[in-house]
Amino acid sequence: MEDKLKDLKNILTDSITNEKNIYFTQEHKNRVLKTIKSNSLRNNVSRSFHGRIHLLFSVALTCILLAGTYYIAGIDDIFSKNDANQIYQAHEPNKIPPDSSKDIPENTVITPTAKEENFADMTKEEIYKKLLSSDKFDTAVGEYEIQTVIHDGTKMSSNVKYALSLSPIMGGYSSETYNHGDDVESVITYYKEDKLWTVDSASKTYSERRYRNSVQHPIARSSLFPREITLNYLKSLDKWEIEIQNEKILTHNTIVIKGNLNEYAGEKHRAKTFRFWIDKDTGVLLKYETYNQNGEVVDYLYPKELQINVPIDTKMFTPNLDGYKKSERESANEGQKQNDEQQPPELNLQKPSFSNEKGYLYVHGITLGDSMDKVIERLGGKYSIDEEDGSGADVILDYNGFARFYFKDKKVNWILLMKVDKNYFNNLFDGYEGSKFTSLINGADSDRYIYSKESKQILKATTNVPNQDLYLYLLYPGPESLENPDYQKMKQSLE
Image (cartoon, rainbow, N blue to C red; front, side):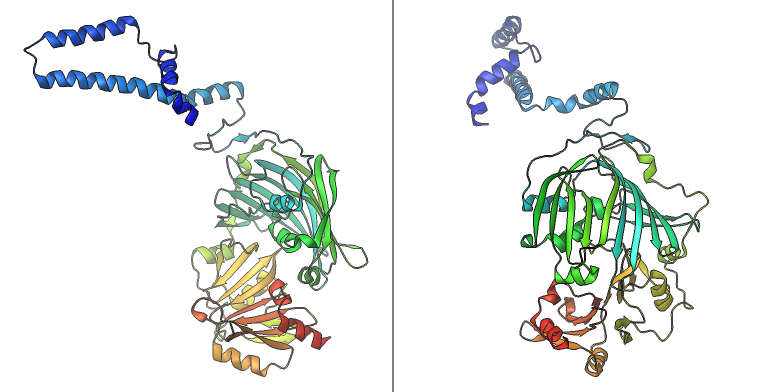
């Protein structure tokens, strides 16, 4: 910029006399001089009019200088953008011109620029950031099989087919087929901008809700946006290592890493070690496996197809709902339906029932791993379906701000009870005869815990929240609990 300012006189002179700009020839010069001379000889012209002539000349000269400056800055490109788009479309009729995401037709075939494979060596820090990035690609089409073993040893597997666009239109489609023993269930998801539809083709019903998370997209995120598993497995860089810098999976070049699960993840998934295959160009988790102490595969994600930056027709982002009706859950949510028959009159969300049955902790008769149907059966239909809040949950049921149930893979992943009656819980905690302990916070307040050795579940009670209300969390111990000295002492005493 300093060099340009130093040569501004020469640059402006070149710009003004350039054939692309305004010509100021000798003829123009003679005309201006003649006008000035003529004006000076006219004694009958008022000074105000004479001043206007000088002002007009100054404005004209200023416009000429600005025109030259705009040329240098490239501002004239703004006025030629429409012409450029017309030329682009003339040569590429099936593609969307750059910087033209607005006013895109409803059904458009998106054809982004193809990406090249990355073969450069990567560091641990680069791998970690790549997995968590949200701008991995423009479009992706693929299919994979995934298996998860939950806390009681039940295997949950599904096959996922998907198509996703991040630019210039944000949207996607996925079809997931779940296998639970002999039961097979399919869920179809459509996603466009801030709307999300879930369609059940068997019952001819659908649900619709808003989705406004630009980082965790709801399509195939176990592979495309593996935020949860990355934070759980890779946050401690010393717990894993790079095994192979370059290994081909399908048509993609991947980097292979391996490591040890922390205690929390190991107990939750019944595994000890893991191995990831990560696409080096995009950060997509293309494949992963976890292994138990015998080296047997427990959880896995196996890819069948992955295509990056391929053409996608945006019409697949919106469902055809002809012949479908909104599900009862959706109708209850939108219409704020009050179903007194489903709501047990004796149920008080601020005084939750609590029990330990065969090692599983229950609140309001619900434990981790239960289905959504069971939650609704126990608590009734006076709930709302909350939007994605960054927790990693697929769906959240909120009961009037007093209870929230977080679902992952259609099962309760953790439970939060808010504004619990403090005196009620004090009596419950004092009278509980199972494993429990307290932990001081800030030298004054204390968190209280009820723990089950059999299921590894933990109930945490804390007032370290806004307004110092009493919150109860039913979940599996996370890093915060595992590193708590009081928790470790309690576990040692049980062992």
